Every structure is written in structure tokens, then in C-alpha cells.
Length: 219
Image (tube, rainbow, N blue to C red):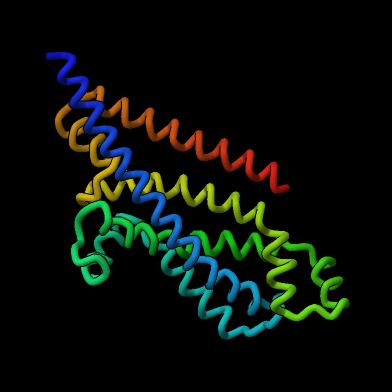
């Protein structure tokens, strides 16, 4: 009986781990792509940017700050109608990717903006003196110089999304957080709660270790 129970627990947790990886991977992928766009616009239109436009910068900055202010669990509920439009349903692992992505876009946009704006002004002026266009400076100076810093930002994003995905489990998103709550907390099965917690801790540590090594290599 104990072997059957252990096998069942392993199967349940492995399925949940797969759901967590699925949610984190796709929400990271979409948020990095979509978050890069406002980051570039903010960098270019900033007061010290290549093409300062105060109105554009302040409006976009305000929008990013507004979305960053929403607690994820509230955003999860507010976006239910939009999620239903995008994926045809509001509950499930795939549906959870929508609010995860939207919550992550302003987060990674700010990180990317900070990374880009930390580029050495001397290098930018040197490129400009050689006749480089704004596009060339953006791609060959800003982006190229910022890749290690942006990579660090992506690692932070992944770690944050792991935590958010656990919260998504409370509204039917599945994943490790869902198992920890349904089995570990609600059914008082401590072994599930402990195992899920250890998996999440190990997951975060592995991601951070890989990120540190990649940062060191790129730097």
C-alpha cells in the first residue's frame, strides 16, 4: 500500500512539475519578447536617450508603473475576460500563461530599460563620433553592452514567475503550487507540502546557478 501511495505521489508531483515548467517557459518567452519593446522605447525617449521625447517617455513609464503596481492575484482575476478571449478559457495551465505574461512584461521592461541605460556614455559618444546611426548605436552599443545585465534580469524574471505560477495554482492553473495547496495544505498531507517546497527551492537554485555561470561567461 505504501509503495502504491509513493508511486501515486511521484506521478502527481511530476505532472505538476511539468505544468510549472510549461507555464514558466512560455510566460518567460512571451514576456521577454514583449517587454523588450517598451524597454527600447523608454531608453530611446528618455531625457538622456538617443531621441528624447518627454511625452512618450512619461506616458509609457506611467503605464508600466501602473501594471507593476497590481498584485498578481488581483491581476489574475481582473484578466479573466481577456484570458478567455485569448485562449478560449480562463482556467487551466495554458490560461495561466496569459496573466503570468502580462504581469511579467512591465517587470522585465523596467529591468531591460535599466540595463540598457547603464551603458557607458563614453562608448555611445565614441560610436556617434564615428558616424553611427541611432539604430546602429542601439543594436551594436546599447544591446550588445547590456546582454549580460539583461541575462541577469531574465534570471530574476524566471524566479519571480516560479512564485507567480505557484499562486496561479490557487485558481486552477495547476503546477507545483496547486499540489502543495490541494494536497499539502487542504488535505493535511505534509509529505506533499515538504516535497513541493523542496522542488521549488531546488528549481530556483539551479536557475540562479545557471544564470550566474552564463553571466560570468558573457562578461
